[in-house]
Image (cartoon, rainbow, N blue to C red):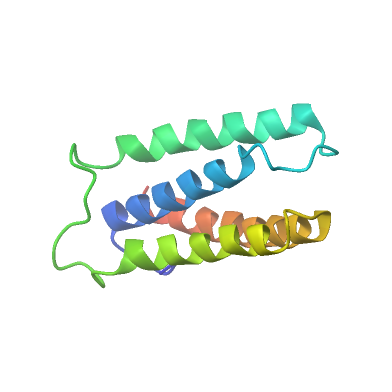
Length: 119
């Protein structure tokens, strides 16, 4: 998914990942011991990048036909659904959130590569 060379498709993938990350970290179940200012800054940055990637897409925001697998977005949705289920299964424990934080870090590293594709 993350080695996509089509700029519009890369922007769509990045946008979907950012939207899911925003949903996870803006959840009321996020750890209360996290630094509130840092969390707010993260959410503001995510929102900023969501807006940036929305500008890269056509008005309908859909992937172009014939460019890559048809289930790209479904795969991304499934990945983040699994993360949400993991949090729920582990009662949103600090350990579960640490796992999610590591998954998010990997996503941010891959987003960097996708962002270079959209330029």
